[in-house]
Length: 119
Length: 476
Image 1 (spheres, rainbow over the protein chains, first blue to last red):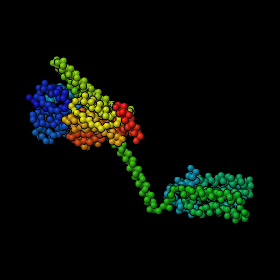
Image 2 (cartoon, rainbow over the protein chains, first blue to last red):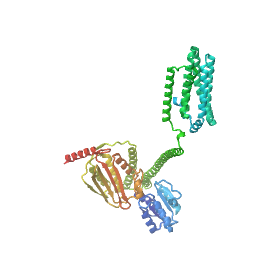
Image 3 (cartoon, rainbow over the protein chains, first blue to last red):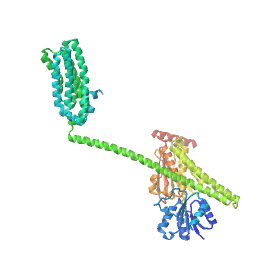
Image 4 (cartoon, helix red, strand yellow):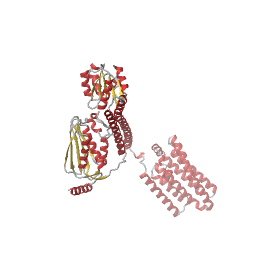
């Protein structure tokens, strides 16, 4: 079963999205911020990560940068940013290396479709 | 205007003056010859024909010496100067010729003295111009004394006293006029040494440079202000977009759940979803309120309603309200006896509610919040200290800027409006707010408010203290 890690600090969204993904047939783990997310990635080796950007402690972009620069073993892992920030990441930005960028609010069916396209 | 017409000074450039000075001796000589010729003719003018001839000669002489005066000037200068001087001389000569003709008709005997007078006038006026260019005493000698001396020589008669008086009066008038002009007029380059000239140029260059620098600074400031406004707009859009989209995402998520799971949801689940939606809506309306009230405050629509406020009580109430919202934190309040402060109670409430809710919000893992109050001279000092996440040092200078959010605040809901409003209110009260923080250890805000109210003097302060004492006694 495809393992997905969803990192989000808003509890309600975290629970709702996780439930949707679970119902769509994925094995879902969650984390509440970047640092927890990084630990979870190292622990469970997910097939795909979906992460919010704006979070306390380590944010989604910092997590992505950390992964891409220091944890080469996760280089092939798709990383989707799902954020309320509307700024599209610029080319030199580390988040440009994100596999995909989705805006909140997100249509769950659409999200599942995007996730499936990478697994 | 008159000075300009008669002296031609403003039209004379530095180079022209130099050239004119070089031409001055020939001016003086032609002036002398012209005067002599005019006089010789005038003495023998017994009919109108001769007088007309005299007039014509006066015209030509006047023109000729002005021509010679300007002869050595540069071609371009010469053209304009020549035209101007011919026009000037003609304008003077024609009415005098007419007058001369008329006088000859009336009384040939009086013609000679009046002619002299007229020549003196003409010479004197032109000598003013001459003296401006070449201020030599002999210009006056030639223009005034020569005709009088000649008259005496030719007529062998005593000069009429009235004529002498008029001539002397005019001489004095012109002398005073010229001297005063020379004293007050612009410094002529003839008297300026190269060193002085250099200094003057340097001073001018310095002045101009300063002017240009000032203008450049104005432009730079304007640009900076524009950039700040652009930055502000960008931060506002980023903040508003994020802060609105997050509750919208929650609402949308709940709506999608309600729709897709309509059949399996229990009534309790539905109620819970409705609650979630409502609290997200409240989050958005609160945000809107905050943005609007900040805008209103900054556009100066809110005037302060000053009254004697018990700061201690205001802070206590704010702590209690904060406790009702969030029971997770403990407020350690430590007040020395505080006098009341002349201030807007509602606005102060807003200040402390904001600071206290920030203290709670940014110390999720440290429950203690310390509040201190004391009097320091004419000010009441309130300090609110948390032991939370702290702020990066390089974020501190911009902390009170609108829509600014510290790096450590990421992921914590906020608009970057609160502290800018707090600062605005405190400044309206002529108070001050400062912040100390170290990352990971906590943040402390210190507010100082003038006891006597905004713009208060020593007397206001004493009056406020007295009111405060009276209130305390009443309460006691």
